Figure (cartoon, one colour):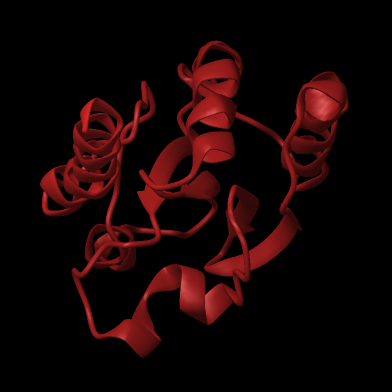
Length: 152
């Protein structure tokens, strides 16, 4: 009898806890400024460079990537007038689905890192792990430098 009660309790906990958290929206851990597609579309993009990290609160590697890369991105590009660094959640609903920036760019999986200039994709990568962390920094920096002079 005790085993049946213990089993019933375990079954209840395993099924009830996920449903209790199901309706609660998780917030992505980010120290990057979050932007929506609608906000991005309204910005002046002439001679501007955008480094955008696409992710979602449901994505563990996205949260890790933002945690690891945010300090470096903010330090490297934060004081530059023509380089802007943002985080964009792929679950946003600011505009019609087909017009979302990540859909227009063809983002298939997250985390997705993009460098945009003059409203077009100049460089992208869609992987992050501890092994490629420093080489990813180098590739982002190289993509930004390739686009021309960076003003401080």
